[in-house]
Length: 196
Picture 1 (cartoon, rainbow, N blue to C red):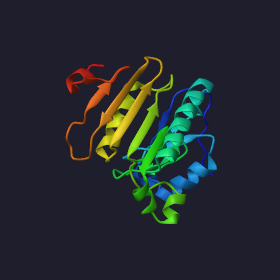
Picture 2: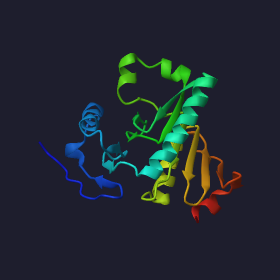
Picture 3: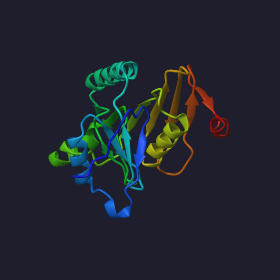
Picture 4: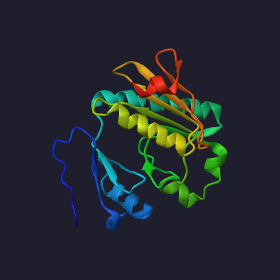
């Protein structure tokens, strides 16, 4: 059995597997099931990103956000909400686990029961990423752009340290989505966003 030791890793790290060791979706699902204490994502290139469990403050913030989204989804009834333990197989080959996500009910119901039990084989309609102290903002912005390119219709990147919400709206059509950032969701131009 191959093992990777993680000692006092306070930041996410990548495990480069190379093309000879690329994990299938089923193998990745099994790996994640054998290591429930870790959050594991796969990049479009097939590399794994291993994240240690969240700290207490980040976990509390995320629990509050997921509770609010779950409550809204239940009241609204038009979609299904997910927490950070759900994995989504994106069209670019990545498997991502946003801190919270929402999928339109008709898209969810169109999946076979077996598809619902494993990683969800679609891009969510809405994703939320909560920046933790160990997260680098450029990495999270790139992840939000990846979501947009894969068809996510709305994404929120919440940065509690800077007290900002970065919102990306768009589609996979290649058009630049609307970017809003700030406490009052002030609209920004893409050139301004790149410098931040």
